Image 1 (tube, one colour):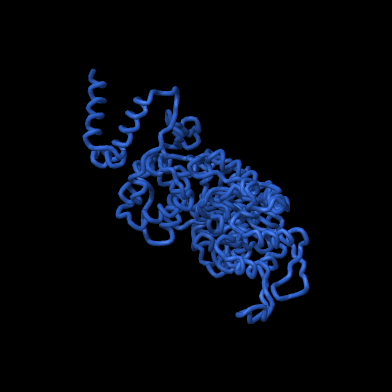
Image 2 (cartoon, rainbow, N blue to C red; image 1 turned 90 degrees about the horizontal axis):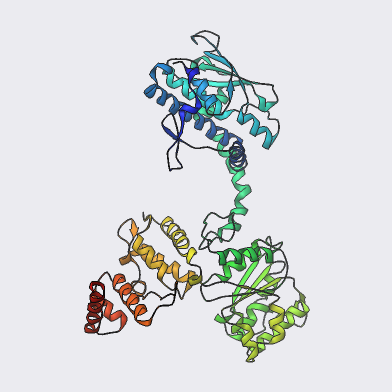
Length: 541
């Protein structure tokens, strides 16, 4: 058989009942050309042209070298044919080669000269960047270089003398031994070895400075849950949280006041930051204050600021948070904790859009978006007279309710894995995952402290774990001894059936330890044995 007899239908094979595809017995992946073009665009935009070209050239070289190794091992007769490499190039869907001319490579003529049609790289480069000023078939020339270098046992490098990416009708390539290229193309050959490090680093520095602000903006979001499809953590999977995030995105585009409600630890401040970052005010300050942590006097001075000499210790003029948030967003956390007197003062600011520093007589205009967060039911607080109705309606143009973690079971393990990755990434611990038993325990716990408690639990386990996985014994005692919540599934069962199922599940949770099971159920050990004996008789009867 000759190289041209190789047929794609015979070389490409999908393993039964599997997503694995093999080409010549090796696993391969199918990528859309446009997706690779987008990757190329992202690399160039992020790393710069020089760095991207060097990476893609060496990637192609490795691909060609690897392909030659497979041919040498599995098809030694075909490997000897000079046309095998180009034909494999075509079978991969990368390019359509024409018959090439070849010499011994020792004279002035190139070792290999040929023409390429249908280069996917030239096509994608022109699609994303337009006509280029230099050759664009980086992975393809890299592939040819790697393949022929392996085949000849000498350094052979291919360069384009014409390229469709530059507007030429076809791509023309030449391959020569390293020493035959001379010094005129040294710059192009450097991409195979990345010898032009200074140039690449200079370009990288420029690019990195350009994205630094974007990274800072997203840094606060790379934590316990995914607030956007663009974020890498991927922890928001529950329908309830996805709906909440979608609503937060829509809210962000308006300038309305928002009350973010939810239990302690669900991530109210993080959602507030997300709303700010997605809003037209994102380039301006985001300022947050916990109203419940300060006395009324201190809260007033923090919000309004004060003039020098306004009170003992006021040694200089100081702006308050209303002014600090000018043009941006102000979050009043635990808004339900503020006193009636402070409620009146905040209401006036929201109505008049101006403030007066403590100790001053003149007013100052302010422009900010107000977000509030609370773990209380403000409408109930209004009904019992603890919260002003007029302030409530000023603050609650929109209410965004965050579901507790116990109602987001699909998020628990993704969140825990994200926190684990962050916790181990900050140190030198090599903890990779949770054991199935530990994961089950995390899923069955009711999480009264929500995401904040989950974060503490994972960090605790990371500190105590001795192996490369977190196990049950690494988790805090309150998780290990917690009783699983009974749930109604299917038809309603009798109380005896529920009790039996519950006792047996607790016994399983305690790894068969009857003493611990009795203690957890708050019953005597004799009572537990009597019930277990009864269940055994039912099973055998």
